[in-house]
Length: 310
Image (cartoon, rainbow, N blue to C red; front, top):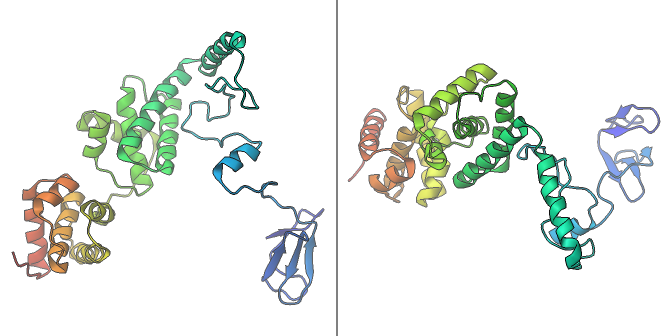
């Protein structure tokens, strides 16, 4: 899509031949049609950085902008910060007589950034959120999503009478479900050192009050992570998914815990492919008992007529 200078209109095809094959020549600041050669637009604006950087250090030195906005900081990263290192802008040490003044400035800066009860609550909660997310090795998009849910809960007054840790854990579980990064409630309870039932109760309360609709997790969501933890090949993973798809079509997974069914499918697939893993190894990774795996794999193997040699 090309902006026609001075008109406010956007062009997605050549006005001469109607082609949508347009070439952006940033060196000559022109947009050219590859079919007929017409210059569709000129004085093209380059929205990229005005410097070249070949590594992260050069990019940080030459960039004149701050860090991007993030929901993981109580003020969204929009306030100024005073560096903890006693260096000036040129990298030279700050004289000792000025360090006491710099220390006082840092202290007052921290006090000013957290000015009311809401910001103090967010500071504690977002620190806890990052700590739990680090234990679970969650990507940044899940952390951001959890922070957004927590902020909405604070704005609606859902935190009152509940522990910050419990609400944070529930928000992380919601974010994992939203972003299709499967983590069980037991894993989140262990990472947050909270009671599983308490997290589940707060989780259902937040869903109801904020009107969040989540699709239920399926056993397929857990296959890649469990296979990776067990060191199984891509072939085993694909075989387990094929077994699960057939089982789901026959409604064999209805009313069953997704992690137990997923573990059973992985056990069957590992045996069939020749990369056998014991039920104990799989149960430790999946967080279910060996009895559950044994019951589920027998049900699936019987209905799908799969023979497993012990």
